[in-house]
Image (tube, rainbow, N blue to C red):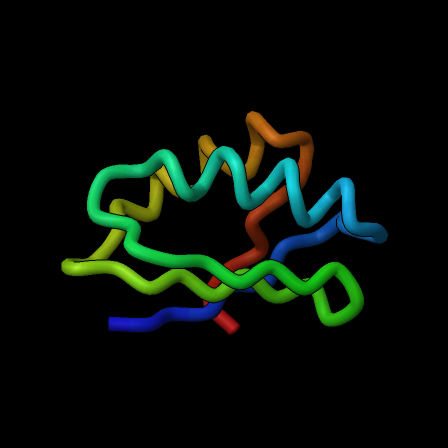
Length: 69
């Protein structure tokens, strides 16, 4: 399954890398795409990703998960 989220505060490749590193470590995540220009994070996973864990991972990277896109 694939779900997209809006993330605020990203502006460059480093931002994409930081968010990608944290989110890809979540259980069940099989792939991610992060686009700083659009502020979109797309997650491919085997099952729905726990949104609180996702929010914590994005926060750990230094950004804010706004919600589903």
